[in-house]
Length: 236
Image 1 (tube, rainbow, N blue to C red):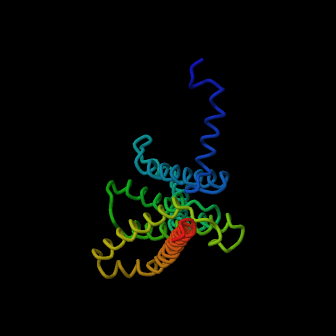
Image 2: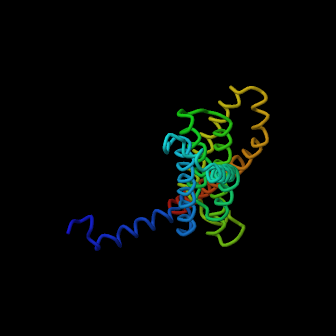
Image 3: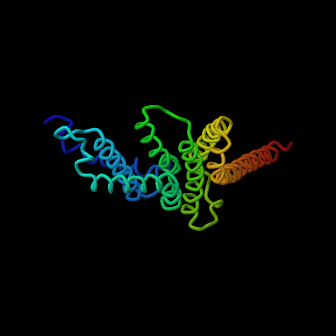
């Protein structure tokens, strides 16, 4: 029996998968993380079905013209799910399960599917919106995870997760840079469409700023305590 089919290795593989699903950057509860990943898989499957339906021919006729009702319904459901995934699902997931990484990724999935249809990467309104919502959701996920660890809404009582803070900071900076390029290049009427989402940048700005302020205060207190202890020991 080959190592790849040996049942003795399956518990280790299951443990590794479980640990990955519970990684702080992915989510706090593995079942909720797995459900969200399955949701993304279903979204990709619907995209594949809709995309192939417009290109695969059966008896010389394109598939979506043979069964227009079914493919029209599929397209409507897909558009609705894409809109929810871009605007609502990331924030709901952040509050429900934490996981800044997956929360930031969620709104970018429908954008990536759209780029596949176009066949190129475009810094457009959808991507700018996805970056904005993703950064906001990642910041909310960091707060939600800390609130759960603290056992109350006083999330600041939980120790700071340095990895999570660095990730959210990086996502916010990269997203802000991309959106700034988008705003500087687009016509005024396109900017007006994006403008309502611009207020969401207050979320990562406040969260990241407050966390780094706490981090600096903690470092300053640790240094002051160490200096006081050294003074007592040396008598100087």
